Length: 188
Image 1 (cartoon, rainbow, N blue to C red):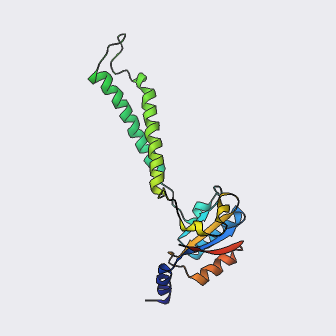
Image 2 (image 1 turned 180 degrees about the vertical axis):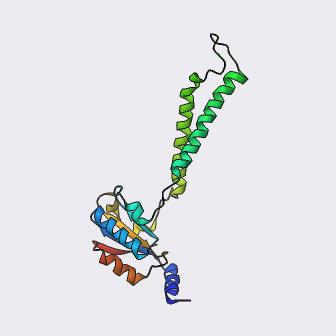
């Protein structure tokens, strides 16, 4: 076993989640995330008070398939809504109203649309909750000093001990080279 893997094994048993650096501006965290990615870190995460353009790419996040899942389920919801109306008006309880055909599809448009929206909204919400691992009332990053500012005016970049390139001293030096306000150890 190499020295680096021994150190990772020691850190895995320790009470350390990772190292977090605090920045003042979105430009600083974006530059630090790009440098961390270029250096080879893969288990990195950013915590910001608002969305920062380009940060997902800098962190190496892949585009989500949520849109395709919502489109598919919305289409199923629309087809289900249309079928529900068609079945009740044509098969189950046919009524001849004013000589109109039993399958008068223009009358079905509103409910078909509403079923598509309903199923899409529930799918998006439930898929997002499952994908994000929510609800999660506790996360180790909450132990970071000054982390309450992440929802107001500060930007945090965390490199986790689970990263294969994580070395406590080298990673700490790397984060300090990015000129943050402070670098903190994040306990489990």
